[in-house]
Length: 124
Image (spheres, rainbow, N blue to C red):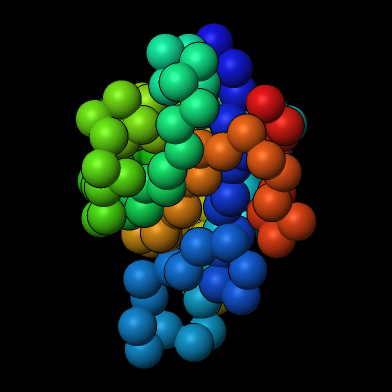
């Protein structure tokens, strides 16, 4: 399987943290040693592209403990690959008053053969 071009910026770049009214929260930061989301091979071979918008709950240890599809790519293969991979994402946890906290974040996952200059991640 091929790796996708992945986009995940938190507040001011990759994804928006759902922390309405909490301006004093230090947002979580993605740890990008390796992006664990795979481009479904049969979609790659068909030159299919798409974007799935996920909502992930980042726990106080930086792991993802819940994933929801906010906007489907229109392809079940992309959506399920995005959900499966997002469960393995790791973040520097959010903090409030120096204490680690749990927050929700939106993570756009781009499945494309072409590089996107506005995203972080690995090339296919």
